[in-house]
Length: 386
Image 1: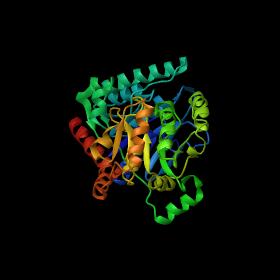
Image 2 (image 1 turned 120 degrees about the horizontal axis):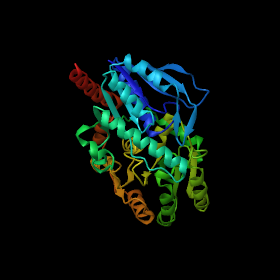
Image 3 (image 1 turned 45 degrees about the vertical axis):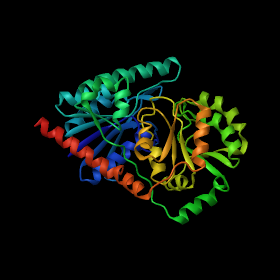
Image 4 (image 1 turned 90 degrees about the vertical axis):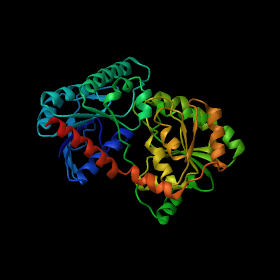
């Protein structure tokens, strides 16, 4: 099967959407399919074309940006050509080009699968609002033209102001979760590298420092947590400096974070192996997201399958890993005091992790299982187009 995957950002860019797409593309290629990724050359240093794990990656030059979106003048030409060479088109949205590509695919009579990641909740500012409007319009057109819309959970789809209009097209496929295998020596090496993880009860957070992540509510919760558990410390893993579009948010948070002193530390971006070690060293992972820009939160499954309990907010989709596994607790969004109470409860041992359940979850969320689900979906669509 010849599969064309189109999205705005691909590796080495890091976000939940791109991580999903990378794992999906590699796993489909491993099943023997011919996979091409069409994406942006968002950084001029990136090669225009390369191969990775059997996946062909084509990057198009960016003329200018519209908030977090990019405009690629060569997209119509390359999309038309590559759609003609493909059996099926898989679009990861939100992306501004989705409407055009869906239309071109329909003109070439190729099935279109939309992988819908999240609703958009754009920050203030005219440019951001224009970008949000453009992405919303693109979503509407591409969803109308799509044969199937894939999302992680039915829970999110039924509660999404956008997706609930297309429930007859929605197919649930779980996101691909993959952690680098590590040894006890890897864990010890990571501990030795960072004294932030020694002699503390680690409240972990893995994210970009971005508005939708609700970091301020974890900051608000920590004084109460520290009062009950004096050696508790937040260790924040992920991009926190120069996050595009989030500088004002960071400046708002910094005074509050600095007031926590040694009870908050930024570890920055770590390798995949180090991230696996980090989960094992956490006492709890917190996902305090606040809006529908967060529709699942793959990091919480990564933590759970590492044997670490999770505290997640009660948002559609986001609450499902904890609900289905029982390996964590759910807290109302935007509620620092409630978040503090739940973190304290988990640190005091309210959640147990069952090894057999963890093994089953690893299999269910494996990229191989997800790729097989996509393969079956694509095959059904192709048979229907014959």
